Amino acid sequence: MRHPRLLAACLAAGLTLLAGCSAASPDGAKGGSTLTYLTFETPSLTSTFWDTSIANAQKQVPDLTIKKLTAPSTDRDAYAKQLQASGQFPDLLQSITPSTFVRAGLLKPYDQAWVDANFLLPQGNAYKSQVYIPPTNSQIIPMVFFNKTLFAKAKIAGPPKTWPEFVAVCAKLKAAGITPIELGGGDPFAASMPLVGILSADILGKNPGWLQDRYAGKVKFSDENIKTAVAKYRTLAKNGYFEDGALGVKYADSIKNFTSGKTAMYMMGSWFLGSVPKDHADDFGAFLTPADDGSLVVPFAVGGSMAISAKTASPEKATAFAQAWSLDPDNYKALIEGDGAFPMLKGKTLDDYHVDVTQVFKDSYAYVLDKNAKVSSFGWATNDDSMPSGLNDAFYTASQALYNSDDIAGQMKKLDDAWDAATK
Image (cartoon, rainbow, N blue to C red):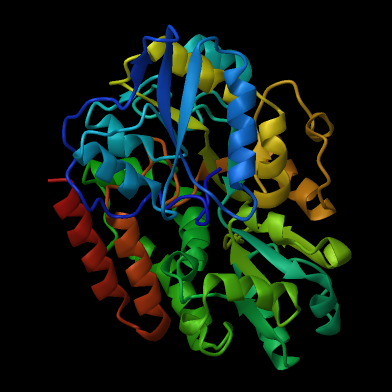
C-alpha cells in the first residue's frame, strides 16, 4: 500500500535517527505483552478498518494487546523518526520505507522461508537481500489513464503504443478543444508523475540497474540520455498539453477534473483505480507510458504491510501478529477497492477477496500477473532501488521547476549535487 495518500516514503529525513528503546511493554498482571503499532488513516483506511484488522489478528496471538498509534500526517517516516528521537519507536510500523530505518539498525527482518511460501514476488521489496515489510501488494507508478469518450470525440482509435504516437494523440486532443493531460502539479509528487513514467520507460527500461549505477558513480542525472528523456516532459509543458495553471491544481482537484471529463488523460499511480467512478467506469481505460520503440515497460513498486522493530521487547509476538495481519484476506478488500492496490498473496484470485472492481482495474492488474519487463518505478521503490533520503523532494522540486523552465541541465546538476550530498 504505497501511494501519496498513504505514505510519503521518500521524503527528506528531517530528524536524526537516535538509538532508543522499543515502546513495547510486558503486561505482568495479565501475563501478556502490549505492543505499539503505528498506522495511518485515509478515506478508505479508516479508524474502523484498523480497529477491525487489529482485533482479527490479535485473536491469533494469545496474551497480546495492541496499542494503536495514528500518524498525524501522511509522512509516516518522519513521524516514526520523531518517536524514535524521543525513545518511543513503535514495535510495529505500517508501510514505512525500510531502507530509512534499516541503516540505523531499527528493523527486524522476516523469516525468508515464510515470505517465500506466501507471496508472489518474495524479493519484490527486499533491501540488501532481506525482507523487512512483507510484499503484500503492488502498484504501477504511473499508469496513463484515459477517457474513452473524449478519445472518441477527438477521433482517436485507441491508446498510443510509442512516444511519437503519444505526442500525436496530445496534439489531436488539443486541436479538438480537449485538454490532453491532467497534472495536479500543485502537489509536488503529482507534478513529477510524467517524469516518473518517462524515466522508468526510457532509462530503466534500457538499464534496470541505473539507480544502482548511480550509487556506484557510473552514471549521473546530467548524462545526455537523462536530459533527452527529461526534455520530453518539458515539451509536453511547452506545447500546452497540460491544463492551464497546472502548478496551481492540487492533487485532490486533479482527480475531480479527470473523472468529471475535463481532461482526457491522467498520469498517476495505479492507486487512482480506487477513484474510478463506478457509475461510468466503462468510460476509462489505462495504458503504460510509451517508450520510443513501443517497448512495454512496467514501472513497478512492491508495497507491504508492517515492519517490526529490532528493539521490541516481544519479538515473537510482534512477528506472529505481523504475519497474521499480512495474511488476512479481509484486510485486502479495502486496499483493493479503495486504494487500487494489486494483491500479491500466493494462490489467490480477485474472487477470493470478495471485491467489486472495475474492468480497468482488472486490465491494469493483468500487467502485474503477466510476464513482461518490470522495472522499479523511478523514485518509488522501497527496495535497493530506493533513492537516498531527500532525493525525492529534490526530484519533485525539479519537476515543478521544469514545467516553466528550459534549464534541464541546471535542474539535473542540482539532482546530482543533492545525490552526492546525501550519499557522502
